[in-house]
Length: 244
Ligand SMILES: Nc1ncnc2c1ncn2[C@@H]1O[C@H](COP(=O)(O)OP(=O)(O)OP(=O)(O)O)[C@@H](O)[C@H]1O
Ligand SMILES: [Mg+2]
Image (tube, rainbow, N blue to C red):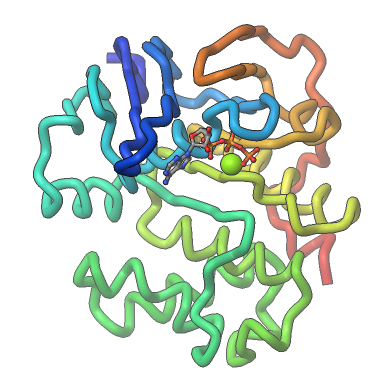
């Protein structure tokens, strides 16, 4: 089975009591293992709704979601959190790091849930933070780092359990252009190593790094196209070579 993601007739209705809002309107979507995809569309078009369902942070109202061949819409919340921990690395616009904790400990958190041994956790956290160019900052807390550095910690944390699927909802939304390029180079490197990467963005130049661009409007896909000419990135996958 080649599709890591398959959505069939997916519907999300937010029922807030007084008002029912359609977040996703009968969406069909397949993403193959190893694709690098951008999700675009105006504010309120359903991008985060989609990502939260893909990331098993929320459930569809109707329809099927197969992740890696498993029907996640049928799982209970315990099974869902296991799938999330094993298969998905989620990166948020606002980083979502724990503030009074070293970045090394932040990266260990998903491995604690996965019941990895302390020595193994620590070694893996150091390896990942080295990879994202933060070897010198292991014992710093998030508030001692820049936005771009915090997002690199969040990416290291997302990679902790080596998930096949990386989801990022506007990961460069709070960053300047230089930091944004560094983040996209990291994602491009992960894609090159075989991960499936899905990134939400409002910016054409960020989407330009990806190989497929899907656009939403009013909860529906209105365009799905191949990017023939993705922005090229440097070949070294070790960001530490390029970022201080
Ligand atoms: N928790 C919620 N309760 C009620 N309605 C919601 C909720 N979350 C999203 N919506 C609605 O669902 C629709 C899609 O919202 P969504 O957050 O997916 O948009 P988006 O494309 O991510 O927008 P943005 O670019 O502003 O982040 C909007 O009409 C929104 O108001
Ligand atoms: Mg959003």
